Length: 480
Image (cartoon, rainbow, N blue to C red; front, side, top):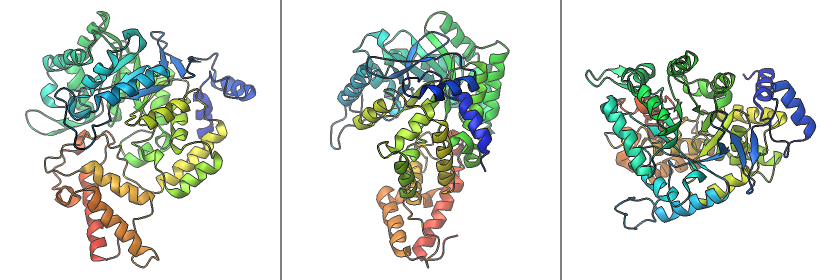
């Protein structure tokens, strides 16, 4: 159960201190006094976009960051481009143009996004604009243990510069520092802490990146974290000891993860703890998964009705975006905006930000309790688990299961009044969403996917659980 007093204190402590235009003066003054905020770090642009100042460089960064992880695809039947593959470069260019015109200036990519083509597509789109009009964030995504040797990781960095058509990176991240893996010689599983140590510390990679920063090829150096909290602690310890200085850190933060990440994912840590550790060190936070892979934009009808009753004009997604952008120490909130309408809506939400009030925060904690009670699988469809060596479409299986939970189509008794309708919706939808040869029944439990999952989902266990549930529905026995 959430400690409501703690919830209120933490919220007021982290409330943004520079939103006077959108918050009544008395409320803002009270929040600033309680939180010790002396002044504001947010400002606006001619377009109305709320901006945050990076205390390390003075960069004015848009509160909305463009995540280049889910780029628009060419229409079905279109011939792939030899350079950009199945991605619609013309549409990417249009959306980047719109983003820049409306104050968005932070673009986040990676060598592994979009079949390895995200950096290239991003570089093509941004190269058409003055270099000082945007900030590029990319990552050292050396997940494969063949990339752990220093020279291989160095090649990845150099290739990023080439693909992005630039001679420096504004924000460079050590990617997914808490993720587990396997020993390249023995094949034995390694913890997230061990992998972090090998990927970034023991091989001298971070020392080399610091040298690149001194040479001006990197302007800000940070890391993104998922998984093993000991890796997070190690990197902050190195910061505290002065070995490395982290200019920013990317964490997952949303109103469900604020208190429930640990209970949902087991080995993860609640966002309130992650943010608090960064806030007390003065390290700006970059936020990923504000919608938790779209989960907080597609809540069930009852929860949606509560959100709409509180603010009929606000979209379901805007509540999550406002929550993620409210804490003062947040530099930017990333959103993977595949479609122009997503971009337009998110620009509207942050132009300017209407921060979450104390009462709104309490309301969203109530909503989080309701969502947590549904027991969905915390998959964000990031695709890190793919490809499965046995062809299983893991994200689509989890996506269908979660969708059915939200829509009330996971019957728990064959005696319920809507059993037939719910059973049909689940089974027919499953076959339509996931081809038979790619369904959960084909999982052999090899575990290759699990070590790559940022959410630390026990993927084989969940696949087997879903497969058992499907078999019970087919045989019309009462599901457990």
